[in-house]
Image (cartoon, rainbow, N blue to C red; front, side, top):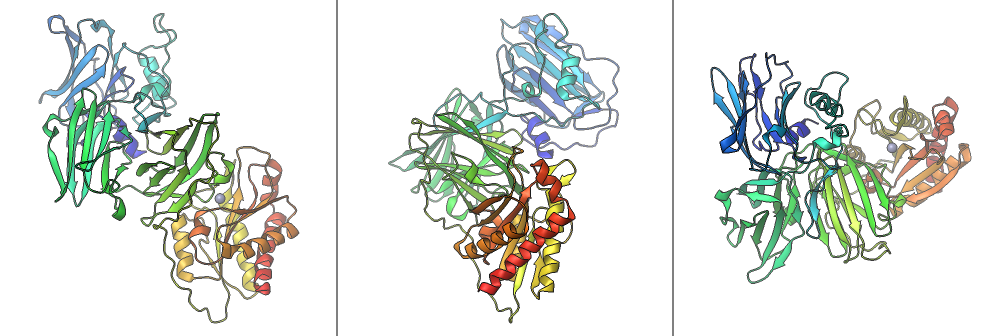
Length: 619
Ligand code: ZN
């Protein structure tokens, strides 16, 4: 969430601002945002110390010059002074300056067009944020920002739930505070205008400010909301062209050519008033892929064959994925992550390839429940990331939106025909992880038991009942039973610890066990599903899956949901025969109450242990 702060409130202040040493009495303004609802300018302070001031700044109107200004006393701009050229009906420019030091005064100048009535400007303060409201336009419904489009479309399409992080009064949302500050919804004029969270965050223009080429990577930085169109390929010389609609280029960069290598260059131009065009001259049109940063303010072109991130984004986990709309011509897939993502979007004629460079997939994600994703595939990337490949028809058009906080993505697929493609792609990915040789265990059978989730990752939960506790409890019972039978048992966690999926795989790969068994509790949006599932992915795991599943059905009084071939991370990346058992649904009231009982847990553990034993007896 910390990133989110930076992102929203430094939208126009692309340089990260760190508070300088300022007298405690001063308000430290560290970012200035012209909200993309085109309704608010906000001067933000990340300082939580209440700023005490005696009176609200007064707005002065300079009629002849079509401008208005106000001064904030005892305030310091910790960012460089801002000159915002804004894209709002009636408002043309906003200047934010340190007007004087000692006394510290920040001056905000608003320039407007002749037909704009300056009495529309309202000035309020909410906590340590100054808000200027321009009653020019009304916000629409926005949740996400548009980052990729197959065809030219309006960039002003955003949908994201706003999660404001600036200091808010206890028990109040930011929207409520703004509503009450401006008395929205209470005056006659604004009777029907009540801000909801979503009205506060909206698309802006993209101000492309810098191009840096280093080690064959091209970093494009700016501020605002960007959308990269599907590239166009030109020949003689061979070029790749990307357009960024609704964007302005720093004039110092216009038509400057940057050398990537001896024969490769990138050039930026202001194609028209609202479009920035990037032209990469290269013999290999697939060589450079755009990688979007998690702060949504930068992107980079990197060499697709030797991908290495230009950013330092914390690891994220793809936790949820679902089909949002099941219309006949439009499908929408929403993907949710634990942390902001760094990603690439590659539109191939027959597929959409989404590269999540810093995110791995939670093993709870099962593509088989989705129509549009029935032919989709996950592939682990060498750098620890995940690729999701969604089969498409060539005539389908794609729009990709990401949440303003970069923790969610929405892929909208509009089909020219109603029939959706199934399993269109099957070519192996050469980025899959290579497996080492299996060592000798001197007659002993090694088993890795993987209790699902743990630590900060609770898994599925209902009330106080958490998946991570059930899986650990059952796993420990399995460990005990197998040890009694003479097996060498290793656990991927023995307590309430956070262990990533890759760490679980690494633990197993170091041990090189004979089998790997991951234990999970299932969950559904519906309260109906209940019962047992056993998942395997590789063919070498089918026999183990069958035996353990049969044993589960034998010992546990629960319904049979069957065997599944599922590409869960841990059973796909481990060398040993690997299965993942879902020992019941936490989302089903009856089954949940059973899952926490001594008898169900013991029966489940016994079933798994005996299933494992049966498997080795058969061998
Ligand atoms: Zn789970």
